Length: 301
Image (cartoon, rainbow, N blue to C red; front, side, top):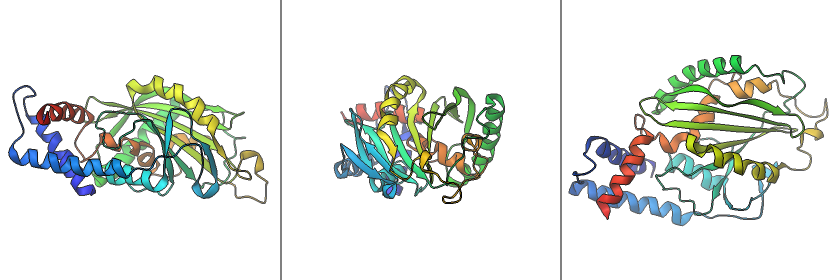
């Protein structure tokens, strides 16, 4: 399935990149591929099962009440979309996705959603290094992105460049929540990705919420987050307040490590992989996706 999706989208993108948008039309072979691809893509959406109300995630570590206007997709289906449909690397931490009503996994136009994961890091102590040096963190983040680009190239993904903060790292001691958002350029494209991150600290691990979005959706992300934070909680016994020294495992991670990815060389790959819908087939860019979508609609009309 993955091979068909990536190959099909690659052909569509290459076709759109090379052709004149007003006068060119797909060949018979391309039309055949388009029809086959659309059939496969539609089958993904038809199999999706959406949930509402209360759901338990990550083997009971997370309790979620699906916010109004959203639907929940469980871990297995979310990983299928992210990995098989959108071409991301495997990630066992994924616990599910919150998507807007009307969501279609095969929609080539941008549509923001939220991936919820659980990192079993142990208890991250917030008593140290809560004063976050924004300039220093940005420099480290940019340096680590350069390192992670080597892994991205090996995995067949575009390289990325962190160009600045959209929201400087901020820790809310009351909510035990760490926020930050950066602006990321897709090399070889004019597209910029919004890398919006939220980490909720707990007793035995960290809830990770990552927005799948582009820069123009920043306002929508900010509007949706308060409800998502309010409805996403650690289960009883897993909250930050439940930690007991000597009883529960303590992590050596610091807040700065979670922003910069210092503890784990490939963490930036994990952080940015939600952009997979924009980065299929290596050198392709989001601009090609938008362009091919418009051309495809004309071609099959």
